[in-house]
Image 1 (spheres, helix red, strand yellow):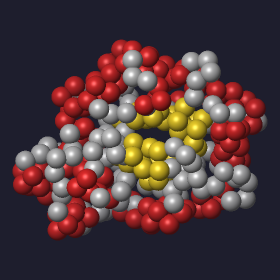
Image 2 (tube, rainbow, N blue to C red):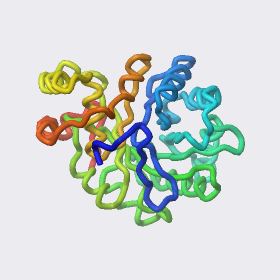
Image 3 (cartoon, rainbow, N blue to C red):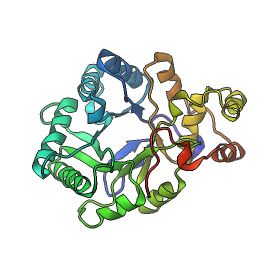
Length: 282
């Protein structure tokens, strides 16, 4: 499969007629006009998948970029996330609808809506999931999933979820933080694994192993890291506000990392210690 990937490659979502583009564009800490311009640049470079969140404070900017791009909405895949519930399912549902309207206006929809974090506790997780199920039933959200969830959090959902498994689990993933236990569990359950921080926020740009592989393949370190994710079967969400990097990060399809070099990258894993944001709690 690896050699045949293109920027248009997609994966089927579990129990859904919809598919998710294999490469996404992240917008964490991208604000105002910068966010709009970065999204437009990404869409021009061929991305069709943008990942935002309520917590990022830029859903409206993503929505503006979608409209300004003139790309048919049906050709785009937009993800957002809810971090905290309201006092009950209805107030939580209202927060979800507010996001949908910011992104896609009245009568619009979001392709994928995630619970951003399990950290609020069991009741919080349950409220958000029930509200997401309601939004899915209402056609406001096409698919629903989770982020930063460990095995215990997904197993817990079996006690109340009508929609199971979650379509996606978005977690921190890169060679230094491979989270193999939860990745294996998600693959077993048929859950799509999304990789945030695939570029390690540029903190490993001078790592000797990574630099040597970038030189070998005549690619940037960022392109090697994104290609690594793609070949692992993860959906990477690289983020940048630098025009040249946005284009560069989308250009990861003209080469394949060979098996021995994938093994070398696999060997960099530091487990939870390698996380720069958070490893899941299984």
